[in-house]
Amino acid sequence: MLSFPFYALSGTRNSSMATFNHLSPKHITSPLRVFSSQNTPTLSFYALPKPSLSFPSISRRPKTAARPRYPNVVVSAVKKLSETDLVEVPQEIDLVSRILPPDSGVYAVYDNSGDLQFVGISRNIAASVLTHKKSVPELCFSVKIGVVDEPDRNALTQAWKSWMEEHIAASGKVPPGNESGNSTWVKMPPKKKSDLRLTPGRNVQLTVPLEELIDRLVKENKVVAFIKGSRSTPLCGFSQRVVAILESQGVDYESLDVLDEEYNYGLRETLKKYSNWPTFPQIFVNGELIGGCDILSSMYEKGELSALFKQ
Image (tube, rainbow, N blue to C red; front, side, top):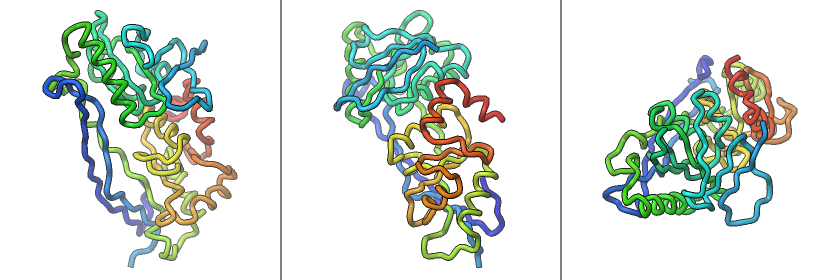
């Protein structure tokens, strides 16, 4: 966090959880959680008085761009669960995010005996599997994955439901991790950090030029992401992917919404001049501009981010 004199950081954050249960409410736990916040903290800068195979995916519309490619994996929720290939989860934690996609979709986790342990859905498959690998490594040996190209709640629910129904029809039982009351697989994730605000409001005169505030912000924080929307609700696909990648890396980062004209008034145009970069999102590491979504995605797929964030 910044530690400027006379800055104020205030606010609260509330979250709520919603679950879906379309199969057997008494016996099945669904992993879908929806979080919302009513207030966000205000940071006020003012004086107080390899070979790669593609991921087929579910889509309601024709694809307009190629999906990122990941080595050694071919998965699709269009296929039945029984027809989807198993992918071994690497023992090396750092390799998980290189093998699995940071996309939304459904996934099934198997132990080393090939028994299905859990069927889940996630807004970031790689991050979810990584969490399981850390918490229950003996039960997280391999996975099947189906990327959902249009990841609204209904599409994710239907993908999860189809795999659950197929497994129950074949085995006559619910996966252990999806049984009612099970807390091994489905846990409340830690609250996300809130987005920063540069000013107390657009009608308050700043005592420090906005460009100077940007300079101090990126130099005093290891990773800063200027995105469209908030980290909990990105407002463009590029910002959503940047947030997903940063979350999958487990890096501590600050985020600012360049579209917030009330508390970040003038940030969008001032940042373009400061960075000499015309588009958003923009990611800074150790005070230096790394680039936008394309560059970050390329570094992620090459496994270069871990070393960068350790510098």
